[in-house]
Image (cartoon, rainbow, N blue to C red; front, side):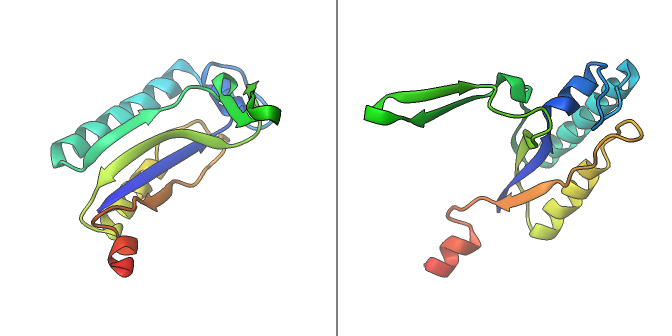
Length: 142
């Protein structure tokens, strides 16, 4: 079964990773950032070796986000950087093909232990089953 596993963050947290502290997050050191990337690299390599990794990526900072919505007369309304500095949104994801919900939960628990500096916000790791031919939703509708 495939699952989307997501981590979240805010612009303030991205800024903290470049050394700018805020009320929400302490500044990260270069060592903090290196520890996080080493953790993620090791995790991704293990998931690739086990055959469970389908895809995964970190996303750029929220300040580089663009919203495109329908506007009056069918003209698009385009908004750059639509988030406040503390709004939480998707920061990265994995698509995993795991034998069970229990297995993907084990992986998410490991992701939740990713190193970060003391006082940094703690965000949940979100697991969502991907609907498809092997999905419980498809089987139920069947």
